[in-house]
Each structure stands twice: as C-alpha cells, then as structure tokens.
Image (cartoon, rainbow, N blue to C red; front, side, top):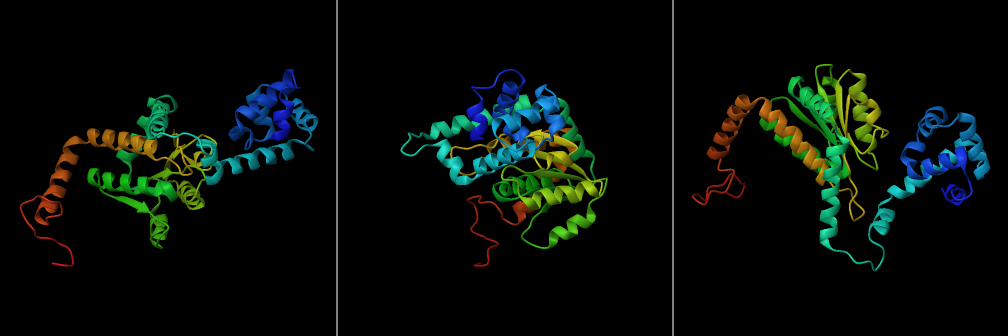
Length: 288
C-alpha cells in the first residue's frame, strides 16, 4: 500500500481516481476482480491495469495481493491495539463507550427496514433456527440461542467444541435458518458452517461487517454491524444490540405463544429454586 500512498499525490484523472478509491476502500479493492472493481470506481479495466503498472506493480494481481496483505496486517490484534491507543497515549473509558455508541448508531444507517424484516420473517417461519459464532462472537451466539429458546422451539447452537455440529449439519434443510455471526478475523469454522448450510438449501442470516466478507456472499440476508474497539479484541456491543432487536421483534410477533412459553419456564425455575429469592437456602447444587 506504500506505493499507492506515494502515488496519490502524483496521479490525476482516472489514475488518481483509482488510487484514491483503493486507499479509501481497501476492503473492496482487495477482493473484487478487475472488471467489477473498475466499474465501481467508474473507469475502464485498461485504465485500472495501467495504473497498477504505473504505480510500480507488475500488474493488477500484484497490486491486489499488496492490498490484501495490508488488510491482513491491519486485522492483527497487536496492530489494532497500537492504532487504537498509541503508546503512552491518553485513554478514558468514556472513549470506549463513545466508540460503542457510534457502532450502534451505524446500524441505523447500514441495516434497512427491509433487511431487518426479512431476517425476522425467517426466524419466525423456519422449522429450526441454528446459531453459530466463534471466538469473540461465541458469547453473542450463546446469548442469542438462549433468548430464542425462550421464544420458540427448535433452536440449536452450533459449537466446534464437540462433534455435535455434525448432527446439526445433517439436519440442515430449506425449511431452516442459520444465524451466522462472523467478524474479522473471520473464523474458518463459521464460514464453513454457513457454506454447509447454504449448500443444503438452508437460509442464512449473516451478521458481519461488510457485504464483501466471506459469509456475506452465502447469505440470504446481510445485516452489517461495526465491531471495532479501543483494544485488540472485537467489541460485541453493536452485535448484541442488533441481536436484541431481532429477538424482541420476533417475540412481539408471537406475543401470546411467547408469554405461555415464558410462564412454563418461570414455573420450572421456581420449582427448582434456580434463582435466589432470599426465602430459601435449598439448592440444586452438588454440595447439598
């Protein structure tokens, strides 16, 4: 990318336009083939190819590999932390909160009503709901699975921790939906799960950072969500907010059935003294 940065001030016209676009949108330039990228920039393929050579690359492919390497380095945890908070830089927890608030605000602009409503319809109408997310997305997947189990039947968490995921894969069908939570650095297991689901005809709802991410290309519905934090790890705040919105809307669409299901859960929890009430010392723990 250093070659492109140096060329930015020298090139004008179509070449300058191409260089600026790649610097502004490396996540797009790194993965589109030359023709769709040229169309997106608004120049001819020959102009884009000549620009790559003029910058100092052997051709378009070498330039694109350089952009991909830049993206890979950018996503490394150590680099992310250095960029977020420079050494000896001042940091306040309020900075972190503001960043998360902005990520939530982005959802309002990035996710249309049509996309959201389509996702809700799939969660309501499907025979079974599968949920997958790995790494820092795993807690969000566990949370959404737990909430959805209180709303409806047939909800399964797909985890890499046991071989049970094979059973889930064998049940994928066109009557089901998979909720895939996949953010940089894009877990291979999550991508392969979405691919397995799509090939079986299962609908896929992808919560991911952009339409060019690995799972987005497999999805029936893409819900874009920000993930950047002030440290080396992904922030789940915006993801959780979006999942909350989905679960709440699904619950309200089948209010009576959900109320009955929640009552049953509450009755069982009460009989088993699952939650602390301050009235009894009985416990279901092994020590009693």
